[in-house]
Image (spheres, rainbow, N blue to C red):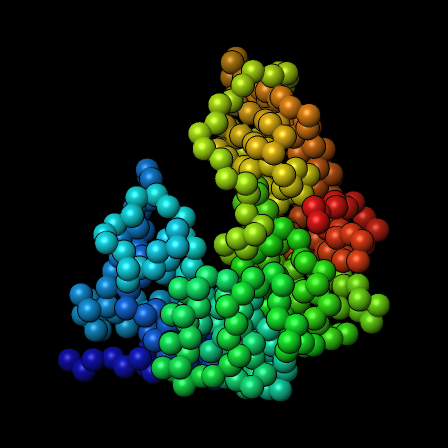
Length: 386
């Protein structure tokens, strides 16, 4: 039997993405058929156990895997985690129980779709935030030209790994190891900035590195683990406005924007009353996004009819559960912020407009404020923490 080649697998993946209406731009398709993803996966990845229970991350090493199997794994349209809690898969001594992914090779379909949505094209000056494995940077080099691409990675190990992979694949963009939230002003202005991490808000200094008319594509997230991908256009006056895009895109949050660390916590007694909303609404993609807009300082825990919001900075808590009589739900709140009150009001506003997907929302940035609004700029709105 003839062994399938990497180029054939790339071609098949492109055909799949075209059939799924993900890819349209011929230059983006050409990049997808050209860039060797196997180089960017390196020598090992982490593979997760399946639910239920705590996730166990098991290193899968290229040298221990048949070459054909490794290539088929590489060209699945799937995200592969390459680092857990700062430890690269090739450096792991064995399986890791629990832990949080800190770097990955995002599924190619999302990366390529984002490059297309951002308008990456030959000659455009592009800043990539979150180099990761380097795959997205390689795609950008193929499309825009490596001389036009700058890529910033905060993790030194991941940055060095990406540098080697890009060199092996034949690409020489400007690579920077630094805090991506600060961008890289030395190469500004940029026509396009794409973040392959999520942010609680857009640092205004980063926005200023875009030329007027430039595009910023970033996933807005927060401590509620909700996500919305927004495409912003920079105005002549330094402001920006745009809309959230269709779909369900999520990325690891930028490390400086992550929630404050905390150990085990105790849910304490508080004021009790019936909940006005079904807590399971926070399991809906946009429902959770709306809740996060209302209580941006709250970490979201739990699922279904058992939801917990925890604000470790102020000690505010909200715990929602099925009522003792089985009819409806009960919320217990304590602390200076009534977190569930804010969530209920926000969800009620969203529901009154038909509970639309996050793509019905937009965002405006000025030097003084960042606001997410529903449907139109003068509609219902929420201020982001900046």
